[in-house]
Image (cartoon, rainbow, N blue to C red; front, top):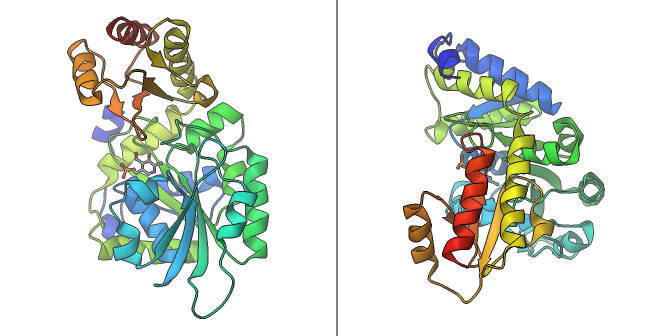
Length: 327
Ligand SMILES: Cc1ncc(COP(=O)(O)O)c(C=O)c1O
């Protein structure tokens, strides 16, 4: 990847003259079966661009209560697009159903918010990397069409969802107007995400990206890393998933005070519940001292993520360390 970055052909991407960025945008659009794509510095920007192109001020966006857009994007939707978010709690592991969503769709009246967009997240980060069944997405998209509501997918970890389900990215993407994907999480590139969708909307997104200060010049250097990741690092996600499962199993089968819900372990994220409520910051510090880097998840859980820089042995060792420290 570093070699590809060093050798990347570059140009001025603000004038759409960077051949590597253009190649990346063409390839990712094609992988997702969309007309066009735009490379962005971050996943947050890709999601916020989607909101900006879909909505008008005063509109409402339905999403899951634990969605990244609602929890971790610093209220960007309200001050960049001036829209209201309508969080809906999913009955099943962060995964919304058409029945969950229906009551949140507003009746059409001038004094009500306009339900403009449904934004789903696949895999669902805060729920522990859970994967939407394709059929569920299809049902939601039928409801959305019927109600004249648009659909966006926060697909930061769509690659992991595909690895788990065996579906192609296009199979999911066909049900959404726009899809954002990330190159810098499981795929291991240093920088960047993309928003994909119809040409007209991506042209509009390019303008907003510039307004928000995200127009990049010789971005081919980082795009080359993303392109390498897109081409080479998707298949190996099976290893990350197997490692996450192994990490979880060791803890699940131990007699430690750490609980793990195996039903949620579908991809590369494992959430841990510490029985007896130890101070979580202290627990993280103790683990870090022993070489195990976990982070604070939501709802008082600890969060472990497997990725291309950790081996099977390291994951097993990490699980054993968790059990020893909290046995
Ligand atoms: C589901 C999801 N969407 C979007 C993002 C935002 O990505 P970035 O950190 O590149 O802004 C993240 C980051 O963790 C995420 O988990």
